[in-house]
Length: 265
Image (cartoon, rainbow, N blue to C red; front, side, top):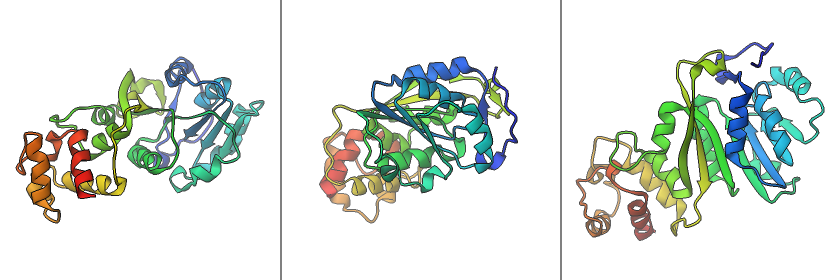
């Protein structure tokens, strides 16, 4: 079991893994190929960074807590294929940061701070980077939301967005007892693999806004949530799919949202 000599900061959501076997399992799930660059957010005590460095050509890690410099540099001594940028990942320019690397595939593998899980995914989705695979440890309830289906209570705007881009899969659960300090929730490893048959979308910005507006008041139907839209046009698409304007957003599949967005574009 890993031991750390650091001061954990609640404001950064710092919960470090103890068991290297879990880390090895996460890295195996990523299935990292040759000549690859891996991005990690929140390396913390470097327990995953070291395992990633063993299989990836290069690892680029973002750490917001500059007080961890000595700990990270000590733990990563001898790993010459790791770069750490001490910066908030959400404020970084990923496209610019990766320009100096040569790689065939790029991955995102991370035990991310739970409080910024969704912003991180939104940043990834809105980037111009084609990640071969994303593997993240997230709060169990959040993992359920990412991988659920239309008609369920957990189905929301982030579910639609993620499932447009990726095949989403819950890989395995991790007990809260495996962390220092111990959080109040259990975790799940979720993988996101880029869809090979992604639906054709005319305008992503319109699609993204449509989804957000459709789910803005989850208990209301589309007629109420989309008052500023061309409801006659939307109704035509809904009828073709067996719905009307009284439907709630949580009932609609990714495919229906894409049809509506394309009609509005």
